[in-house]
Length: 291
Ligand SMILES: *[C@@H]1O[C@H](CO)[C@@H](O)[C@H](O)[C@H]1NC(C)=O
Ligand SMILES: *[C@@H]1O[C@H](CO)[C@@H](O)[C@H](O)[C@H]1NC(C)=O
Ligand SMILES: *[C@@H]1O[C@H](CO)[C@@H](O)[C@H](O)[C@H]1NC(C)=O
Image 1: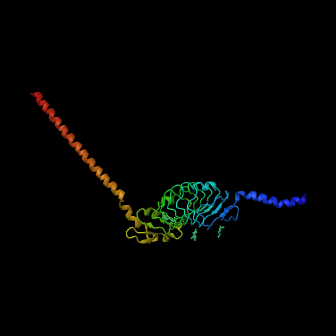
Image 2: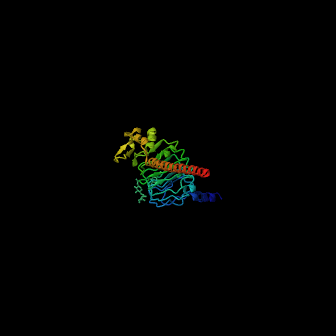
Image 3: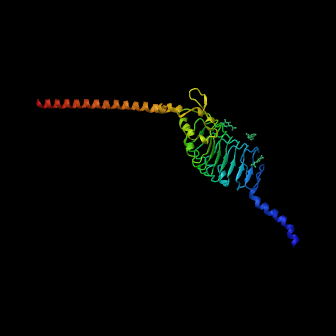
């Protein structure tokens, strides 16, 4: 009896371990160094591998050709803490895809082909601390409430994108921000930039290379200058000068005032004329009555 049990032991161990790891199958062409890590770096993948163990916490998918993330991805892998999608072919993020990730702390979407970060992209990601969005050369639009809800975000990378402008609201909505990268973007130092300039001046300690590291091109001749050479006075003209919309409003209101004046004087003139005729008429009546 006893020798039989000892003979069975390794066999039982094998069965139980294979049962235990049933939900832990490592995707082919990936490495799973521990129960919570799936490493598919540099495997020429053209889509997110399937199946990934549901309990995955660290998912490394960098240096592949993945063009999109399924919209239920973070619903499925809700334990994800660390997601690295650096250097893939992502061109857009489906609305809501990343908005359910309540545990995600680190997200790298750098070196992709994103064009726009629309509002609510990261909705409920309250745990997110580091967000990397640099090196997306066509990224030229960050919606003003793109990052609202990211209350824990400390590090935001937006360097070497195609940004010419950024609504300062985007940054004002990040209460925990400590580090911001904005260098290597084709910023335009026009009047729209003035508000961002003021914010950057007040928060220059959050920029790794300070104001020196960021350049913008001058509206007059396109010459690029580091922000450290500019001051709030450089944008002083913006306060005095009127924008095109201001001009249109002024012109339009001018026109409507004159139209109103013409209509009013016409009305007045005809009323006066009318009264004159009326009083003449009644005088005539009186004269007629006297006859
Ligand atoms: C992931 O795997 C690659 C080899 O494919 C290796 O070079 C890299 O160090 C691994 N990363 C981690 C965090 O395990
Ligand atoms: C980006 O990924 C490709 C493979 O998909 C690789 O050949 C290239 O070296 C990677 N670039 C960087 C900067 O890691
Ligand atoms: C990246 O996006 C741009 C414009 O949206 C497109 O012209 C280009 O082909 C894309 N590149 C890749 C590698 O997908």
